[in-house]
Image 1 (tube, helix red, strand yellow):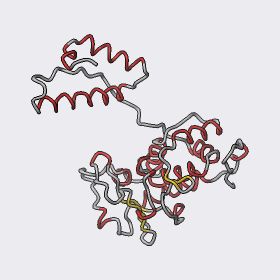
Image 2 (cartoon, one colour; image 1 turned 180 degrees about the vertical axis):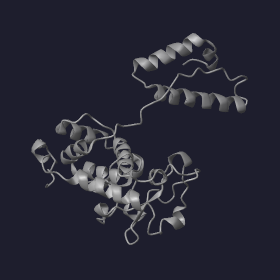
Image 3 (spheres, one colour; image 1 turned 180 degrees about the horizontal axis):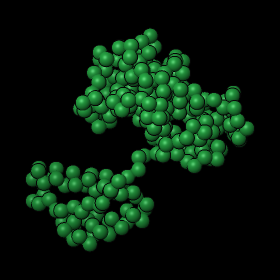
Image 4 (cartoon, helix red, strand yellow; image 1 turned 90 degrees about the vertical axis):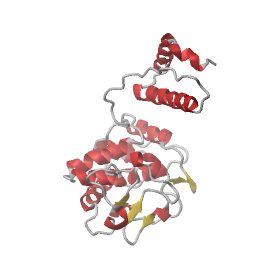
Length: 262
């Protein structure tokens, strides 16, 4: 309920920063909130709705850890073995493509060329975003199981979030809770361990746009060696996650949960 002019009082800005910290906001989240406000103020100033644009304080972000910690193969197996089917589906596609969580949750059968073995992670009608580019990647053999609708679905409906289901699987497995981004970072680390060239890892993760490693998916995706090292490494990771010799004994029966067959 404060006017924009209140920003001229630095103490009020500092009090707002303190309030965000009291709510356990990370430095990066605080900056997202602050930058949203700055953008609104600058827009209003350009449109003549404000005579001046007050200075808005930033907070030091420094080096931040990536969203979601990478998992070891043993942790991956435990979480997978204790997950419900739609969480397992998310995990398989996440480690099999290295895609961002939102791309996996939006993935539909129509984005997959089963004959050519390609997955277009950018759905029809979505404008590509350079900072969150969604590439065309190779389809690992372990994921070559045709389906209809969404890749991650519950009772035929698209799953909007896997956060709670993933946390429940971690708790049942006795593994420290991870986030949906953990599988992207796990895939990235796994590819480097398997000796996948840096440029290929970048292309697989959608980091290559605008760099010297840029890949033109329209034509390059049909080359026999397109992301060949990456897809072989990720296929191996999917199979490793699905290997469940000793995990099902940890499963706790619950309503609507059917333990996977080892």
